Length: 230
Image (tube, rainbow, N blue to C red; front, side, top):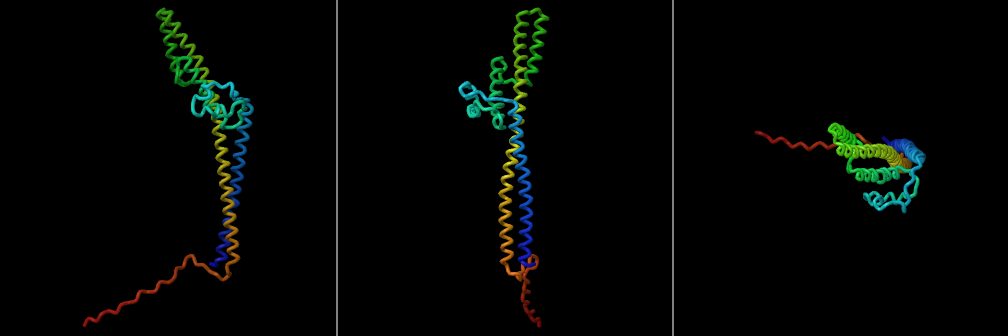
């Protein structure tokens, strides 16, 4: 095969690959932009505003290492996935944790409170059956606190789930944008290689030939004379 033909073949292949890469890059970039715009639109409609910095308590600022984001976003309207994650994990979660401690059910969740309420209801019923007014009132007080806390958990965890879903959707958008950027870089590399291939093809003499299959002939090993056996 002529070297010029080989160079042109590879260069055309590289150019076609570059077109495919840039097309895929534009698709992913569009999806990334859609994700960002969609998250911003949906969160903006909720009109969730972070508490101003001077309104944040020390507990809210220092509950966990990531709580510093509440200071960073203080006073801002939620519009990004990162802001949604911050609000869900360090504001709502902290307030639910504080509510659980105040109600006497530290470390519990919406799921675990169901069993606790069932047990307290049984205690109230049992105390009333025994005409133990004091025990019934104490159990009823705990049951009321558990019922109120479970309602708080239901609202808080539902909102957290929705916000974290928005955060996850935004991450997919970020990844799509990142991959698009990588594809654009690869496209540039392929374009440069294709140009180099075309240049090399036209500066290579037409008569130059390359062989991809044939190997140079191997000279036969010299034969040794057979000794006489007289």
